[in-house]
Amino acid sequence: MRLPVFHASLSPHAWTGQPMNAPRLTRRFAPVEMAATSSAGHSDEHVLEPAASATVLFVDQSGQLGGAELSLLPLAERCAARSEVLLLSDGPFRARLEALGVRVRVTSNANVAAINREALRPGWLRALPGILAQVRTIAAQAKRFDVLFLNTQKALVLGALGKPLHRRPVIWHVRDIMTRDHFGRVQLHIVRWLVRHVTDQVVANSRASADALIALTGLPADAVPVVHNGIDARTFAQVDASDIRALRHRLGLPQDAWLAGLFGRLAPWKGQHIALEALARLPGVHLVLVGAALFGEDDYAQALRQQADRLGIADRVHFAGFRDDMPAWMKAMDLILHTSTEPEPFGRVIIEGMAASRPVVAAAAGGVLEILRHRENGWLVQPGDVPGFVEAIDTLHLAPAFARQLASQAFSDVQRHFSLDSYLRNMTRIIAHTARDEPSADR
Ligand code: UDP
Image (cartoon, rainbow, N blue to C red):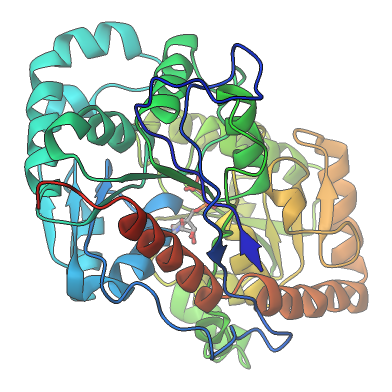
């Protein structure tokens, strides 16, 4: 499969054949040979590994373990011999990277870290000195590498702004659905400008993320390659789930209860409150919430406990906190639930649930629609539709053979379409390609 690769530079020339408001880009189609996944789930072995020679500086704004960081982990490991990760905040992500042999640096600034969707305007003024310092730090580090890979939005801003200093090609991994539903006008404007004028390559984690970026920036529709996250299903198959009772005992979960597990950080848009509402109408079901408030959503975490009390279901709701051993936790469940109220840019928890051979019930929006097919390899419900979630969970609870059938199809699909191997090959190909096509003059 050959996918187009998009390059933009600071060219003053308008791109001919485009409307007046199209981005002023020099654009080349330089197709990348993408790894195809065989029906057995393994990429073509004859495709050569291309990242062998490119050196990469990865930048990520978070030290916490969210989806962005967990998908960077295996990529940074794959590139470890010739790369480094620069974190803009310290946290457990650093230790996880180091344990895999990845070199890590941390450059943190409390004022920059405090800028978020809500506090963009007051935040950035206060943080200006810190922003400038971080732009300079990233640029100084980037000069030691062939290519700069920016894994999050804040990393995009700080890494791309320093391009006149580092003069390295910039890749942005788009992992958000960049629309007004989710982001402020100013934030969208900044991203739009940086992508149109500074970034050399973008790669999206889903068609949903790619389409939103294309609509925002006016990039040609074929300019944003999509590389879905991949996981190693073998780590799930290795969990000895033959004795679920023993596994539940080890994890401190109720023994004989029928368990629906919702995995993800506690945050309003992840919709744990929707799951609690549904649970109140499902007397025979327990809910396990696996995840913590990673980015300051402690009030929401508290509100969930109060909601469980108010609904009289506290004895059937189990707050497990953040956990590292996802395969075991997923295998200990009877069903995996996903209740995000906003379109999920991708949804790693869904492919993990599929790899655990569990039936997945998920909110039908965003990247989820690229993974699940209703009643074929999972069950889709409209976001926020509490009766819809009740019906889905109840049906799968009462029809275990059907639940097993969905899970079995899901396991086969995840191996075929979301393998870690394909993800790594395609990402490393894009990195190598960008490094090769944008040689830096001052190395
Ligand atoms: N996760 C984890 N421990 C937890 C809860 C979640 O390791 O206690 C992981 C989960 O397995 C998944 C990731 O966090 O790999 C969340 O990624 P997803 O794409 O679902 O959501 P995001 O964090 O990107 O919004």
